[in-house]
Length: 189
Image (cartoon, rainbow, N blue to C red; front, top):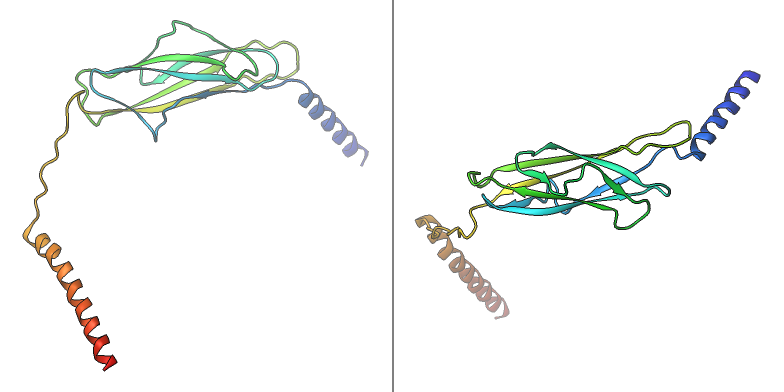
């Protein structure tokens, strides 16, 4: 009985110390595109976009390193920075600027997946336990037709059956209304 009490008190003290010290941090990455809402570009076209980094910790700035995991053939980081300093508790954070370039020979309809990983490499001082975090950002790039190329639709061709159905439905509807009117008038007499 005493051993259980001592173990419980020891566990409570350890848990309290871990909760009081800053043992982990958090940050997020936001982008206007996703796998469900892709960036659409034509062959030979490029676009500059930004991924916003924001810290959710109350004290201390973060140092974040980006890494392109997938989509290296179409994307590049244009800032020229190896590390991004994300200021704590600020609405703006830091932006990672990217250029997405579609090759001239890309086929319309092709999809590219872009996956980036942002690693927190901040050195922590003090405390018994520290967690380093990383967050991913991913989006899809869809290749559209060439710029200025208008897709013209072919004229709609009705088959004979479709034409008969389109004409027959209103005629049947009118006949049904006339029959109903005739039955109503006959009942009143």
